[in-house]
Length: 179
Image 1 (cartoon, rainbow, N blue to C red):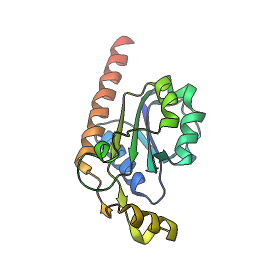
Image 2 (cartoon, rainbow, N blue to C red):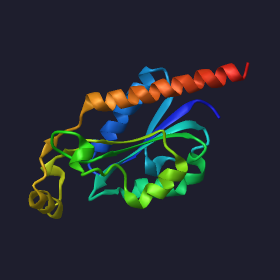
Image 3 (cartoon, one colour):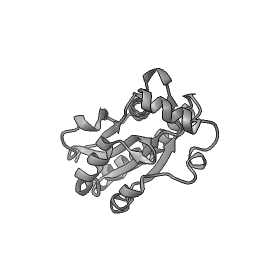
């Protein structure tokens, strides 16, 4: 297995894709060979040492493409280093507090338990009313969700840097073992 890293994501309007791109940028800046792809463009995982998987969240659920990716690749992901992230809540404060303790879709938790990701986190999301359809606009107004871009780029960078540190350590450890 080489030291290639995959950052893959499912997004509806692009905010989660931008988070994934930032994570990929941080990993590359740390000297790690990294691909950033939407989940529906990933063909195989065997060449990757680690996978960072993220999804936009709507009503406590991951996008279908991300859930499908996680289910379809469970057996391979068990053998890899994995990190999971969700993006969605808007407003100030801690995103997990905003979601009343939610940090991962309940329906997917058994798979995550088997994969044993290194970390699972939630990032603030963004709502651009211009991109929403009528039903989504109605829902946003009904729940009085804060509008705007609430993504915390420092938190995203910090999380990605922690991943890079772990991966660089793993590369060094595997390099010294083969000598």
